[in-house]
Image (cartoon, rainbow, N blue to C red):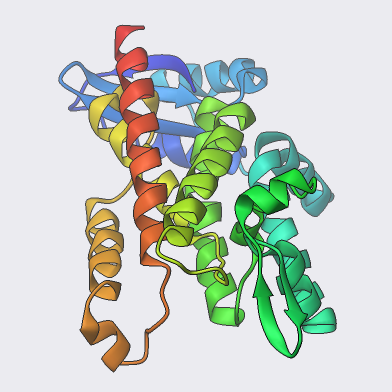
Length: 281
């Protein structure tokens, strides 16, 4: 995000914000002890933003929304440019989900954390060293792309989209890729350490993104990150709830709790490190 303007606390910015959104200018306004800071997501929109700010400060009429004859094309191009890792991860999860519907257990066996097969009418389970030695280097990460039902997929993709967009817009696709890979590996390995070999889901990465965004918003408010406090309480409360016997009693058994915790710890560590760096700058 790029700092554009510092506005006193007592100034009402609603008209300015409405004009910016009407012109499809991605922005954010944060508050601290100095005042309200206007941040711009795309530096290419700097001149258009400056013109709107000038008109707003002089009390002129704000322009109407821009015409959108090719709105869908422009929106998708903008989304792909701003959030390539988030969109690619989401698309891969959907493709894998569709592949499971077509090929079933074959896909599960191919993407599980260890090689799985049938030997003498019994399940044969390999190990991670076996997989790596045979060149199957994707297995420590690939379970994050497995989902076992529509609700499982939809909720995980919803949180991936919510948090992933912030990370890519504010810190770039490289940071997002690092969080996905490290939180995914940590969550998968933590779950595997419990003796489970067939599990999956993006929830460990989602909790990693939650931890990262939350710490960045708390420790470096000027970074532009934001997450409602009640959402943090809800997600952490959900994680704790699924660790209890009550979750199984009401039908939420077989939750990858260790994956959630492993991903969250990675996100918190990355958030702590990068928020400290951001505060220095």
